[in-house]
Length: 141
Image (cartoon, rainbow, N blue to C red; front, side):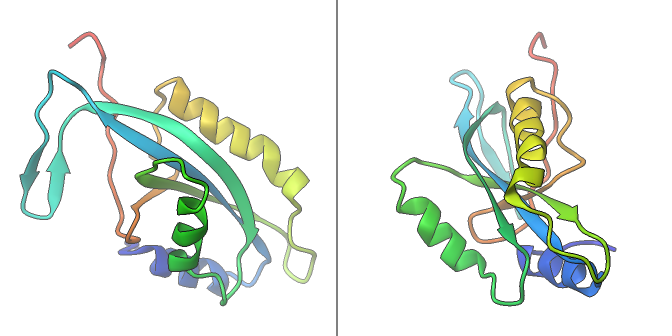
């Protein structure tokens, strides 16, 4: 199934029937000075560096809204461009995973960004909730 928006991800996850915790890492995208950023239709292509800005986790509910999350993140005053998202699933009929249980996964997400690892195992969205595809490139090329 293709996820076309943050709301699609939320809907699909809620249909799973197990309680889930949404893990979000806000990222700042800094374009390379030497690289050009070019728009091709609906995509933006270019080279740059991603840096973690803030990590948080939230119980996944019908009431969770991206616009509220964006407003709260902006109120912190740190610039950010992308949301790196993952889910921590509980067991059907069980409790929602706790923030303490989510913390090591959030740390792993941040480490993956800092170390330049492949981020394809995570969902990535822009500030409007549209999916973003990232590619890791060799910094030597």
